[in-house]
Length: 477
Image (tube, rainbow, N blue to C red; front, side):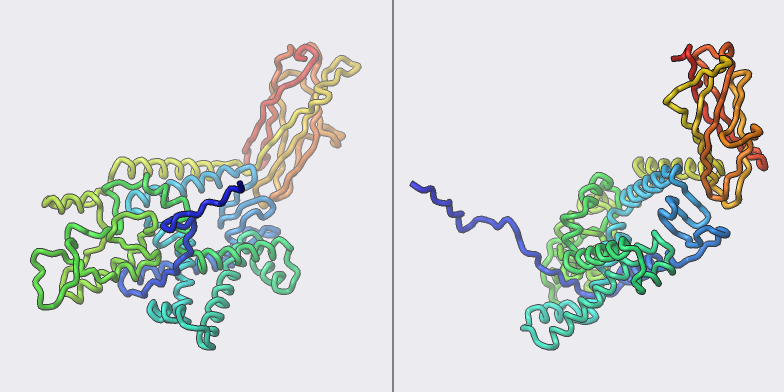
């Protein structure tokens, strides 16, 4: 007999649910105004930073913020070389601890205001609202048949979305090349192929994430909602529905008393204002980004029904529980163990990086010993070792460096190509000089465990850098 494919029961749940578009309603209030202001500031900084100039002298890039230019990072007056990539690591660590600190104090305020996904989604929703109207009009338009009115509105919306996405991708590429030059070459067809490729990729991702995926990114793709639960506690400020005051909820008529019931009139204004489409009254949820738009929506309703505002507000879980138990709420605890730990770590790392930047050398010496052969015994009995020397000048002006070798008496030091034994080397501004050093030592002066110290000295400032290296001989090998 042939086995038949089992038929799933009629009540089986589907493995995939099609996305249901969220149409948040425009609300007015202090949090909505702040979000618009912060969005404008964030976009201005992102799009504008590559165009700010910073004079670093001749033959040096004059873009204030520039990444991977000749392998270096430029942050205004700070220049980070490839050998100093640990400073970039330090910046990333500081950013992480800063995010931890803010989350432990104010919950997911980063997600609600500063996250790039939130900023661009807010911008895309504003464009959508401009062409299609507010919530009810957008829902009605989506359900309406395709007419000329619907077509031009949809096409115009998506066209503007694509322009914003292209500008976003283009702006990011400008952080890696000189912005004015790249912009000119890009539109004249002379930019590097990689520029067109990355602008295309970033255009697609911005359009997709902010335009068509939106809340799904925060719910399914972003790991932060799952991490932040470990960073908050009952004393953290979160966007909170104060159920101790709002319950029991229900519709309310103007002539009815408020006795024996809560202040929530079950109007769903908080739900229709939410860009994630959730109900804040259901408590803490992974999808909630703490944008606080539900606060503005609820406050507006409370004013209309004559009740105090703040039914939804920034509050702590502890205070909600205390009020529900008939106890007075506590003041917000700013200084708590986890907050202090994060603040101390941030301060320590910042101080360490600042000290490193202020005291770092202006040049660098690197020495690599020849391995094959590790030594050569000359006809006069002396032992010869060879070393590859690299000097890096981290300043615009050229440097004159004098080399010295200490550690073994009687060392004869010479540089390949220098006939008169001159140990002075000039390094061009922001340049690298490579050469070979030959060291010869009498056989009776080595004992098999010798180490040399090669010292590079700036003849103008006296600044030094040095390397300790082994000296190979028959006794050592």
